[in-house]
Image (cartoon, rainbow, N blue to C red; front, top):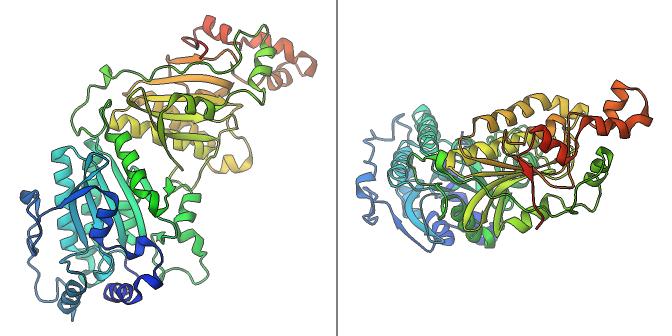
Length: 493
């Protein structure tokens, strides 16, 4: 909800001026924000004002409010009139069709100086019309958010707009249309909990205030970092904090990846994913030749100089953007997920980096796979981990449930998933990223039900038998091929 008078917020923003608001995310008007990230845009028709005539059939009808709104809030009409004089707007959001890097999108841009960018019934009218237009034209939605929350002067009628927005967002999600949010300053209350947090990709500008609780309704001793873009990124709730001078390019990259040529994403139509070509298999980048023994395979995979995920991603993709975080309060630096361009096509990727995978890593990978599946984008996974993290913190964070979620995401994916074992394949923590029946291995890798040292300790209780145990487990690439665990051994680059 809005934490202070929305009229006070808007007027204060105007009085402060550029000197008191150093970040472009606070200085830009709604239209300036659209212009800053697009080559051209056409505003959707505003029945109350002189807006241009784009998509006139989707322009919302002006709500028939009684004097001072649905609650009869004394002075509300005067507040709206002052906000209009101050901003030239009739509502807190401007909707438009915009072109960004050659990709057309529906843009929702908030005007914070209009009653604190708050959401009321007429805001809901505009948002619903814009989402509907996006579905009918098969377009992505880009939200440029700056809001203090729901409009208190309209009471529960304003708060229920969150359900309305959530329903529209869900329909666009079901239609396979990407949604990207840019969090300006501030993004709080229902605007964060619907338009922001529900987006597929969430970007924020540096220093932006981000959180469900506004500044005046938090506990007095609350850590302000938790309510900042940087704090939300560290907690796994955002994908990136993007400097203002890079925002336009970053949005163009994301739209190109999610909606560009060579993939089905963004069509908004039923896609025949069964006919979708899988991601091509990457070439092996490590030492050639197969190991002679099981322990030799382990030694190769544990070699510190062996190529890791970054080397494979850099060689495979021409351009890529990464997502971050599990949206549940955690991040795992040892899991790299995102989308990239390979041979003119968009490929999604989830890559383990050779460390023990934490619950947040499995959840982030599951999030990536489900997003790619919904957008009709093939997936590449790179498997490389000694196993799932097994410390107490990992157990408290739900290792078992997170692994189960990753298994389920792979098992239910309709798009093809290509998996390559590039190093250590440690038990279920590695198998959780391995596509059933579509797994290959590099010569410098191994896959085992358990680490040979642990198997020897459990079954033989004799450390001297580690090498023999490694052979018995049949963990070499050629053993895995004989056992039918992998489909083949990746050729060298």
